[in-house]
Image (tube, rainbow, N blue to C red; front, top):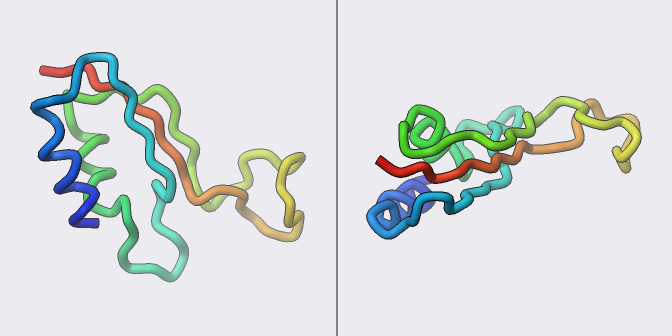
Length: 87
């Protein structure tokens, strides 16, 4: 989680308005206490620098038609797409 947050923090001064940011594993997996997006997710969600374009929730069944394992109750670990809108 620290690497993801550190990377985006260092890049912000160089990112142009309109740049798209996406990340998978956006939600906390059941039973886990840490995950890749743990620190960057609240940073992006609470920032005035990014505008959400699309967020797919994790650990719910988003689309049963495309779920390869129908007995599973979820089909995604989460995904986000945000636009950098700058300061």
